[in-house]
Image 1 (cartoon, rainbow, N blue to C red):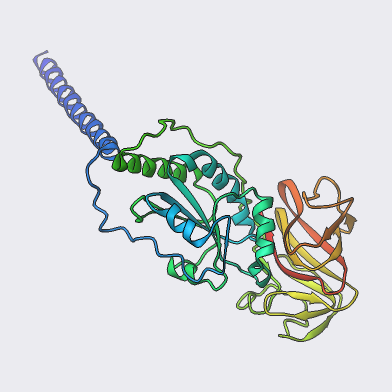
Image 2 (image 1 turned 90 degrees about the vertical axis):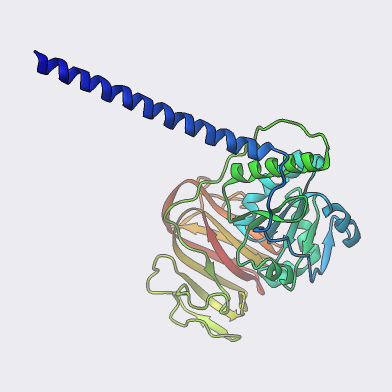
Length: 367
């Protein structure tokens, strides 16, 4: 009996000690969280010695929605979101609804969005093409055309799209590559605007809600981007035609015996350019076996494209938003066109019959 009492006493002591340790741990955790919150909202000077200053915008060919002098004045004392993009990049295009929404919401509170348009293809250096794109996507903020990629290099960038956010003193405090993390990005905008308001002694709204836009969900297993220019396709085994790439030559491509997944096949007479393939004959076609729920194509020059999936005319269940009628797509402006869009990912053999001499194709992208 004494042994049982002794055991019970020991067990009770262990429980008491356990409760005490847990209480201390929880108390410490609460203090850590409170400290983080206080630090984020305090007026204490932030040590910025580890942050890089945003580089100057250099080598700019054209200023859209602004002028050089005006932009210089706008940047002063602003939280600046630098968006490095190009208008034929589908990944860039998907981010634009968020960026334009942030511009609308925070533009009066100290945020300045600057679009740095760094072109991937030659036609993207044309200011008229970029003007049409910014009108199409509702871009009211300044856009600078970095045609020689000098600002791209100044940021030490290698990707489209990429977002840098600098605080009101010009230090880069946030860097994100690609799509996604929209809530994280917006929270950083809010934090830096609060810092600015505190530092400059200005009032701002206290609304911490976030922009709500349905985010595009990528297919996990999908065909990679396919490049038609011999320079862009270096070290990529993507052209399945036996004739292969023949730089700067006109090549007559024959019907393939088979079509392998993630490769494209040309039929007809096509000139091999460094960034594209250009149809020399009046008619030609392109075949590929892909896996995705979305297919986009970047093209230039007038043509009519007729789309077939698995030997049948493209149906409405798979028709992309740029399909003009039935299974046809009429292309005119140089840029990005959505030709396939479906709810789920699947594999299909696609054939595009092209009617239009001088038609150029640059790339396929998939989602």
